[in-house]
Length: 92
Image 1 (cartoon, rainbow, N blue to C red):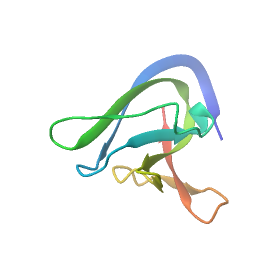
Image 2: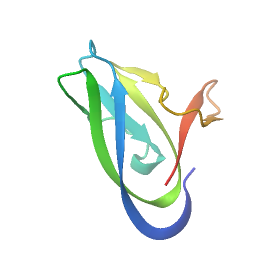
Image 3: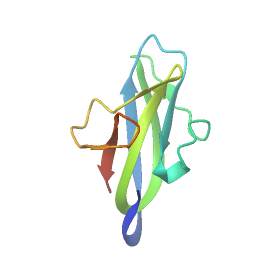
């Protein structure tokens, strides 16, 4: 659930290491959990990357790697999602 704190917007970089993946997407409450909205692009070292402009708020998100949902291994902040797993949490 998005918890807005102000109208200030920031560009946030997301990245996920998956050198053998064929697709990596980003889904979260900032895009109605639709992984088709934000595909990441892979660099030459196997990092998939994208940037998103977000208002200052708290967001939940996950990566979708070749159709499987994964949390962000680069963050330790998570919350239960009510589906038997957890979501990564980002405070902007």
